[in-house]
Length: 347
Image (cartoon, rainbow, N blue to C red; front, top):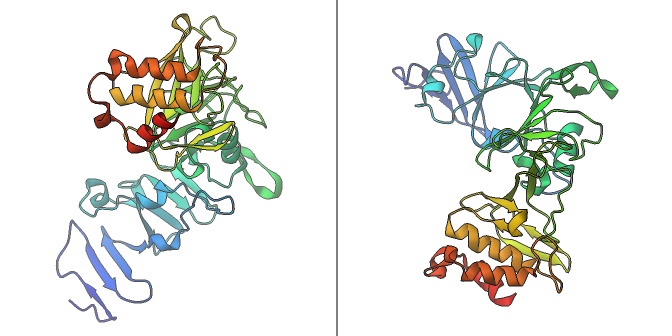
């Protein structure tokens, strides 16, 4: 019914709240729940970052696309809530007790607090730490808008009052999440101004494995993507088990010695986990048949004239061997994308 101020208000409670709708250049939606009046901030108020060098934005894109954003009249806080008003978390919204909220942005300090992890904050994309982690390590598996970094802020401030992030010595300094890769998690255990991959970055979901200091493992030369994990550097377990996390997407040769994977448009599943078996001189695929055909493609497109040191043969020979193996038995057409078939035929 009309609310008397040019808008419309729900006659009865909807999921425990009343809503007011007002039309205009930017439609306004107001919610009153448990005596708290909050206003919906449209997604158009955020600039969703693209994968372009000149594009800038503080938030990873899932923080914009996967949440609704509400601001209350009596505070300078922006609350990240579920998109659906029927969700249990949406209905339990109570900012005084941090209920129904996953993240809170303080509009004055411009810091986004993680509600479920006391003292932890989201590191924004423009921050030096985020940029360096992406540039030196995680560009191998995702685009920067899909990299989430969480940390505890240091007490000291940087140049011009900019916030630095970190923690106590010998603790987890930052947590990295890759939501589009099944929410893979990594812990940054040692801070360095360069944050090179030689620093111990532990793969939380793969026990005792860390990001390898040397991402060259003797095959798949020229491929710009794929993250190699190994045991702790300098330990007797460093080369005991090595795992290659490979994004699953369309491949493209951009130069004679450079092949990339379209990590901005990942396929299903988003990545494959391959084991490096030194004694067998092979990159061992998991059970799904399309994991083997995808590996066959990567070997073929990165093949050179001479044998790869790790394989003991050329990538083309290994590619043919995989396609002839029992792992690829049956009708391959049903488990291969059109571009994979085309590239394999050409290579």
